[in-house]
Length: 438
Ligand SMILES: [Ca+2]
Ligand SMILES: [Ca+2]
Ligand SMILES: [Ca+2]
Ligand SMILES: [Zn+2]
Ligand SMILES: [Zn+2]
Image (cartoon, rainbow, N blue to C red; front, top):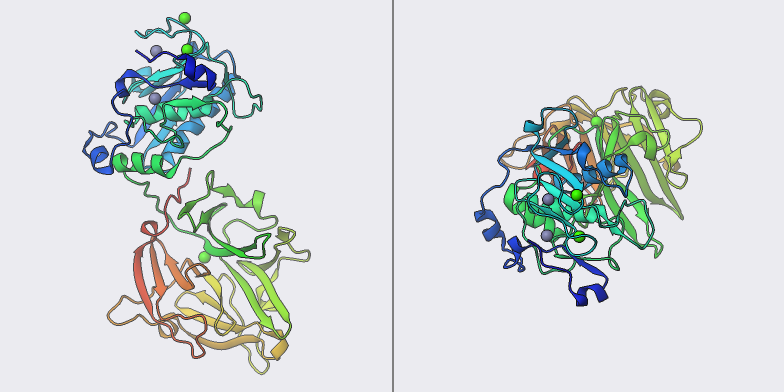
């Protein structure tokens, strides 16, 4: 069934994973052509099992399962498909049976050919078999010998989902496995993402955020990079704005990456401005009655925190107002260099500028819809916002509640007189992609 290994390929230390089924499909199909193909899987939840009669002898079983699972995840992260490992259910409910074998294997009609040549075969909408005469290795292996199972598995799943080969060497659907170019970990190329999304659509992931923030990092060349962080409950995603997608492998647990930051935060604010010859640069998380100062150099909450909001954000001289506990969200406005705290239908505008002697609560306390009115004919902002944040990349303020996002379209960074005008942009998942719980 498969094109044999040629002498030329052997010299390149490559392995052909091309099969006859795709012999005439080495050119990448257009999106239109892919759309016109039958949807191979007509359901979103697909069950798979690594058969206990078909384990590899090269890799520990747990590693085989983890590798196959990761390979499925690489496709599920970019589509509405969900792959579930089914270890014990009735085999008739398993959609994709995965097995390793040598020569004549399982009930398969296609014998494998020993080491070299064919390394795996699979059926569109069906099972995947791996030739265990190949020296498969896990991604934990740094040895230059052997074939990374992950790459072959991702390729074969591509076929199972209906993808043909491409003639692009950087695509995972390229027919030749090149040992020299193969790193243990990799990402789906945008071409592969587009190809599978042309058949199944993009993943649509909904949900509510605890808060959203832009995190500023300085590159070694002193330029800044702004990624957006979406926090939900006890996990978060880093959104790579330049690529318009989440970092591969996210979400991660907050506790693991943000030392001292609690789960279910209410809001975050980054105070960042120039005062005389100094740069004021402070980052705070808020939750309940407490706030947490965060040290970005140490990547940890500062010692002595959390502290009480009512102590840290008390009244201005001559006033009695304080910032309430259990805020909905907060952001720092680059125009007036004030903090905007949101709770229910109100916004509390707090001056944090110690050096002026004017700091405290509050410059104004107003209805959200008065401070941020809708532009003509648009729907006003709701109460109980989930997140408000300043996007450095877009130089814009976004308001998020449930599945919707609004933008302050009147905002300009160097505005002296503050002008606000809010317009509903629509569903946040049509703006930011692949923010999916796993
Ligand atoms: Ca056999
Ligand atoms: Ca073989
Ligand atoms: Ca919130
Ligand atoms: Zn193939
Ligand atoms: Zn087979």
